[in-house]
Image (cartoon, rainbow over the protein chains, first blue to last red):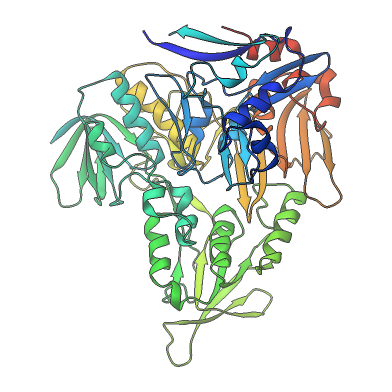
Amino acid sequence: MRVLKRIYVNQEYCIGCGLCEIYCSLQHSKSRILIKAYKKEHPKPLSCIRIDKCLPISFSVQCRHCEDPPCVIACLSGAMTKDEKSGIVAHNSDKCIGCWTCLMVCPFGAIKMDTNRKQVTAKCDLCQDLENPSCVENCPNEALILEEVSV
Amino acid sequence: MKSRYVIIGGSAGGIGAVEEIRRYDKNGTIVLVSEEPYEPYSRPMISDYLAGEATFEKMQFRPTYFWGSYKAKPLLGRRVTNINFDEKYLKIQESKKLFFEKLLLAVGGKPFIPNMEGIKKVGIYTFSNLSDSQLLKDRINEINKVVVIGGGLIGISVTEAFAKLNKKVSIIELKDRILNLIVDDTTSHIIEGVMKKNGVRIITNNSVKQIKGKKENKEKIDHVVLTDGQKIECDTVVIAIGVVPRTELVDSGNIRINKGILVDRYMSTNNPDVYACGDVSEAYDYIIGENRVLALWPLAYQGGRIAGSNMVGLKNKYQGGTIMSALKYFNVPAISVGISNPDNRDNEYEILSSIDKDEINYKKIVLKNGAICGLTLVGDIEKAGIYFNLIKEKIKLQKYKNNLLSPEFGLSHLPKSYSMKLIRRN
């Protein structure tokens, strides 16, 4: 049995404030300093979150690290891989050719196009360096939660 | 020699099969025979390789020593000459018989080469594997003017690579627009515009009749003559008319063949010990509800995975595939899925579309009986996967049609029974 980490959203608590996006891009910025990241860094840091909103409904969507991930199966270059131990769907931007096949097949629309830097895709990495992903940690209404799932 | 599993073909299908066989059978012997001498690489990247945008290292689809790490014995650069399905063995060139218990045919397709005057001259190429790309790369400094016959996916990819290398390229397309089997008219028009802006000459409603040699050396190409009589000077011709399944190893008396090798939903042929996948096979398409040849990398890989697990003895069902293309010519993103361009003579389809005035963002949704069956996106393609899954799951969207073209479109614009199930905790 393995224990996998996953981010879930309680859509009834989400107010669509967009802080998760800000903290996500901050965490993936060069400086990790808010003002610097937003005002000075070029290219602008990219968030791997998409706010899905049709008011009054809103929720934050990031990679679900699927058990049988369509993006990994469809990847043309071998850049997208599933780590069997951690369950993380990882993206290697050095191997990525930006063919966009992965985002064509992601049911969540959770893969981003990183066209400011180079033509590659970008996605949630569950903030490997942190104990809790930055979006979960900074969600003001606790709509985002990190769960450990046993499979 | 005898092996529990024998796989012919070392590309997407073969790789997928080896990975899944090993997931369930740690020790069963696997032999993989491939005509290509290379470690697993990404075929769709051969144009990046030609353009100098990807090295072989970057093209490696799996880490080096992949076959060994999966305890599969690779016979690379070797050709299978025939298969005996009754006695269950195959003959490999310059080798003894190789007996199998379960066999996977993942041999792919081969370029169709028309019979025309001058087709044997020096400087005529096809473009479907790394060796083809390498042959062109080796001669790249001598190549200046190229004629590409065929405006399909392969033709446009090789054209883009040459254009990036500042070669003068002309595409000759038989129909009235390039990529006519892949995308709709508007998208063809947008991509044609981008190609032309990058110096490519596109000639439609025409084809090459003859390839003419130089006066001083008839073996070398001087120009091509088109059906309408016009001549185009060139030193290189790339034939990209189409790819046909490589069924020559299979005798139709043993294995059922239509255009490709027919497989069931478990990727098995009519012979229960013989499987097929990828470009050589005719597998299930979930939109048309029938089998068809779909020569697409992700489907070959997935077909190989399904075949591999079933060769071990599982009963994994192939969900099917459909025509799907993600394109990026000169950095213009475009996606086309399913029935994206119906003729709609009987008005059975409902078509929703929007385009901005600069033709940067284009969306088109084709619905049949209230469910999406075709999708085209150009420019803003990030949410393509949401539509893609609606197609796959055949979700009825009658009441939600007005949301589909909205720039804010997302899961929250869809029936709650669908979106909440997708995002809820489980």
